[in-house]
Image (cartoon, rainbow, N blue to C red; front, top):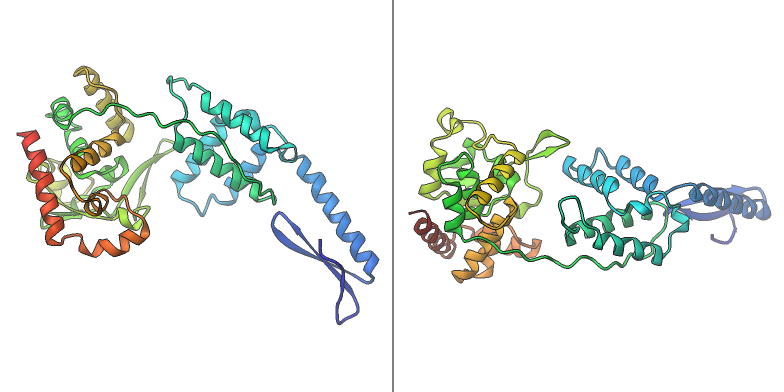
Length: 338
C-alpha cells in the first residue's frame, strides 16, 4: 500500500494492489483515505480465505474460455479433474511451498488406472496451470516440484511397424507419421487440396475435444506449417482415398481414437512393444539420426524448432541440401516398404 498523497483538488489518494491490479482510493482527508484502503485490503483478504485452489483454477479457465484453443481448455479441465486432487479443496491462503511440494511429490508417484505414472509434460502442464491460477490473486511464489523421470521405451523398427499395418485402413496415417513426421492432428487435418505438384503443405489440424471433432484453420506454431514432397509410395495410398478421387475432403477420416486403437491392436498382433501413435515421430527422428541428417534439416522436417532457428532456416526449406536430405530419407523408407 502506498502512502497517502494529496491531490491538486485537495483530496487524498492511496493506491493498493489487489490480485495484481492497482486500485485507487480517494477521500477528503488523509486518515479517511488510509482507513478506507486498509478496510478494502481486509475485505479482500477475507474473500480470498474462502477461495479454494479448485475454484481459482475454475476462474482462470472460465476467464480464458473464449481466448485459448479448445484443446488447451480441454487439457486444463482434464488437469482440474484429475491432477493433484488433494490440493483442490485447500484455501489458497493456506498454501505453502511445502504443501505444494508434497502434493506434487505424491502426484509423481501416483499410478494411474492404466498402470502409468504422470509424464514429465503432464506434471509441467499441471504446475503451469496452478501457477497461472494463483497468479490471478497476486500469489507469485515459485512452485518447485520433483517431476517424474522420463520413461524411455523401446521403439520398433520401421520395417516392423509397416509390416504390422500394411494393407489396413491405418497404413496411410501410420506412414504419414513415421515417414514424414506428422502428428495425429496433422495427419487428420490433411485435405486433398493441400497437395499440389507432389508437394504437401500442412494447413490444418483436426483434434477431438470432449468427443467433438474440431478443426484448426492454422497450425499451432508457424514452424509446424511445413511442406513435404510426397513419396511415391504414400502418394499411391493417397490416390486410393475417396477424398483424392473427389478432389476435396480429408484424406484420413477415422477418428483419433479409432486410429490409435487399431494401431495398438496391430502392434499386439505382431507381438511388438506398445507404442503411442505420437511415438512414430520418434521413430522418424531416430531414422534421421541414424542417417546422419544435420540437425537443421531434421528439425525443419519435423517442426521441432525455436522461433529463431525457424526464421533463419524456413526460407531454405527446398534448398538443394534439403532436397538431398529428403532423397536419403525417402530412399531409406522405400527400402523398408519394398
